[in-house]
Length: 425
Image 1 (cartoon, rainbow, N blue to C red):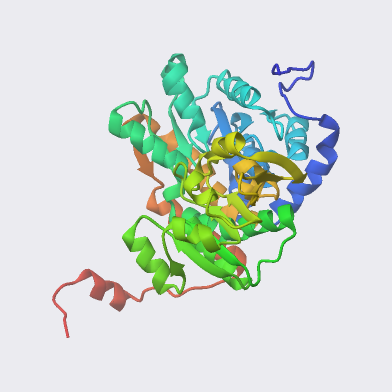
Image 2: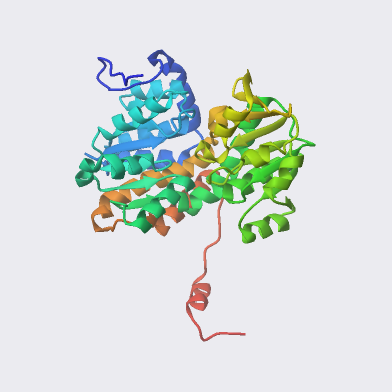
């Protein structure tokens, strides 16, 4: 499929511009739960800290991302947006953004060739700043578009998988410009990864299957922040939760949190639901599928679809689509395994992604990190940097203020005590 550019002033390739009115309404609804980003947008509109900045963003095209794009646009940025996952685009939102003058290249269900053509279209914007969710822009620039490097000030990265790729590039000496890891901000991973992923993954699995979680055996593969959130929500809905891990510290934590912990090969024999949240490859593979009982349901909430070995299933099982976002694979044994959302991010494939109230903090980090990069990018080395602590704490302060929550402050005596070493017992 060729990337289309219409005669409209705003270049784009979206499914249907007539979907824009629906998208406008949904963007407005999400914005009401994003007070921190709303405050930043108001300041950006006045101060224009991103004036003249060309931004290429590869993010999930959702209502919350739309609010971020509007905020960057209000700050003076010239932004082009493409999707960071073939199944995560909300077509009405994409149309609404184009209607507002923001270039978007994203169609839900786009094939692999179109996905990378859309990334190319975003990079043809010749960005000064990249904004990634999975590192596809940065890896494309370093691998194939080094002609763009001279104009790039820096970038930001949204998700765990992308940060892993960036750190591998830094270690090998191939990272060609500084990138801020938004994922490492406390106001991102402690809330977005835990509460956002926990709720939205369950939402996606239920929307796809309409199956009852209560009374089931629910296997969570990986106990990072996303796994913690998913296990918490599954347990809260009445599931018997099993956790699999390779990290002894995380396995110990899961045990102390009250979950059964065992190898994936053992969990495969007894699980009803399986969800991978590791960021690694072939977390569920042939050796696991062959042990699963008839009717097992498999989903992935990691960034890429490599966590579930779909290729093996395609070659060794008979496939049929039984309902939207549910592909059923019948093994030679006769057992059937249901894979949700083609093994891609289930919370965005069959649902709407994270609730806007947690994305408020994540995208506040993105907006303020972009501003920080404009001010400081030329002084930074080609490394992965954390979000500055003052930005992280300011976002937490603004969120608490919006929620009507007040906290204590240290008294002068307490500050003096904490800064001294003379006083003991």
